Length: 508
Length: 91
Image: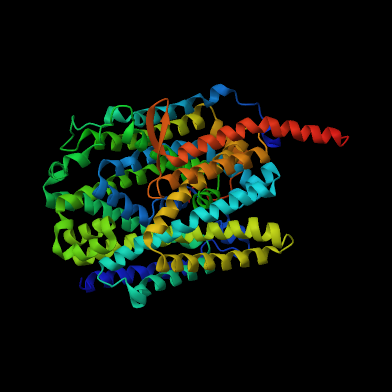
């Protein structure tokens, strides 16, 4: 592929603009950034509009824009599970998280582990929550780099070898720089630009590309029949049907447990801001649905058969479908805009994720176990340094380890993070549960979920569960968290009884 | 929880509007119902336009529950008083 000079110029200019914006953000709603809740939560002052951009930028990442259409392009209808997923997440956001926000706000919690620590008075459970959060988020950051690498490659840069990795390394140095100085304010401000670019790109794509291809009817007509619908399950199995629904439900339940989503929620200025966003964020869901359709547009445009894109597909696989579609359909300057939208779409969540990991490490590991009496300034300084370390780790990870490992780890991350659901959910509504039972549930769920993924050689998270002779293939995260809940609920009265007994025998 | 106790406890009926959230869940949970091509809408198979339409309907349902909470049952308003939001609730 040759370097597309016009597209690269537009791309670089937009990238420089958001870099400037990221550093300027330090002075936006000026406050003392040497306090963790100012650096890491934007002072909890983001209203409905900023939270809308921040959560949107947080949840709909560059990887989403590349991978969802890539799945639709490669596998067809199953890739559309992203739609029921986005339909279910907003009621969950409305029902659960304003309550968590209120508790976190009153007690000054910065992370989910802070909340669990205070709610169940257990350092061990908080440790489990913090470590799970960090482990599940790290591969997610690495995947943002995969999204970015695909568009840099599509611009015509080589992405192999040390020189090839240079654009990616520069982008991450920039990201590390403004995250360090501005904290959560930087991604919040950049998210506004990112969304403007994404919306322009998507609306252009859904108007211009179907016009070129002869309308939506022609696009769907060119999709192979076997991709258009989910295959009908065989006798004695729910087949792809149960996989589709459990993937949607499991992913939806896991979403807001991710530390970066939690950071976005806790930085809101009130519970009402979260409730309003539960309705308003569906605009993004609709955009995501349209983005998923780009996969079919790529099939209709025949980009995989175009010799000009053969090199891209051999390097990046189906992930190259959307960049190739844009290159084939848009003039060069607009390709620059679209690719910048995707690359900036990687910066925003990567920044929020690294901040969320830094908050967890500092609050729940460093301060809890090493420096209980550290000052607030030391706490904020530590978090800033950790945010750098996390990003260096993600870059090193993606440059040295095959991408398929990052994808497998992210898949495992989904199974691990959902195990926090009982600890966070049950404590919000009931006092009947205790730390030991939640820990046992967490350990059992994590072990069984990991085992289920291992039986699929970590290539798929769909586990073929058999119930009374009926095969119900489903998302391992959903099955394992059900076991987690069952263990927690069964053991809670037992541990309560034991605690009462030991209190009595101690003469209390 | 101390601030909450000063107000009369909201009865469980106030939370009933939230059952509306079951509607979008039921609409997408039974895959065989929508895993079909006819009826098409402007060339788009049912499987696709049905799910896209439910994104919009679900958004309206969340908005309706929010408004009922705020205007009719005052649940959201009570929560707001309890939470004491900072300045800049909108921006």
